[in-house]
Image 1 (spheres, rainbow, N blue to C red):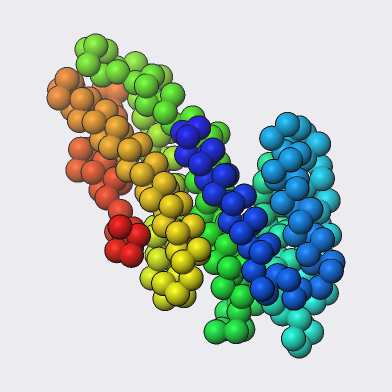
Image 2 (image 1 turned 180 degrees about the horizontal axis):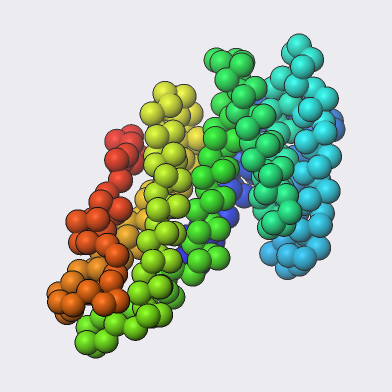
Length: 265
């Protein structure tokens, strides 16, 4: 699970750094460029060595960026800048790791994507793509790290002819976590139907790398869960305590309705 989080964080940083070099960014206002550069500095230089200080700085930066976005969103011609500030705010709220700003994260991401929808084809593709991804990726990272699913799965062993109450409760917790993660992965995969990804090599590569990582994380975790459920039903005929899930139910949880887009293969 640590590998999933680390790889994705690196992807975010590289994506943001790449964005700073685009023609659109060069043409932006000085304040926006300065704010974007400060976000990158905090993510690359400060957060790896001092997460406590970075959390404070990122929250302050996010608050400032959100205020800038709110001030610009209704000014004709300034909507792209507002979207960029919403992207900065959402990223900073997320990477701060501050549980008190979760609602701010959802609000900024929502306001930004609403503005993207309003602009339609004139919306900045990079910022709008990231605003659509930030919530499901933040949710997946939280699911992987805080739940510690790898450790939980390792703690369950139904092949020893024992089924403890703790193991039954652990399986219920894992099932709940998978049910939370599944729609997040599906949201990430459905973004691959956006035709704009096909025309931007950098965006496409970023999306494909992280979509594969997200799907791989879910597939591997859910596959082990199915094995544990199967082991339970193969080793125990009595239903006390009950696992509360059949093998078919477990397989249904593992099954994803969406797949990684063909252009990512």
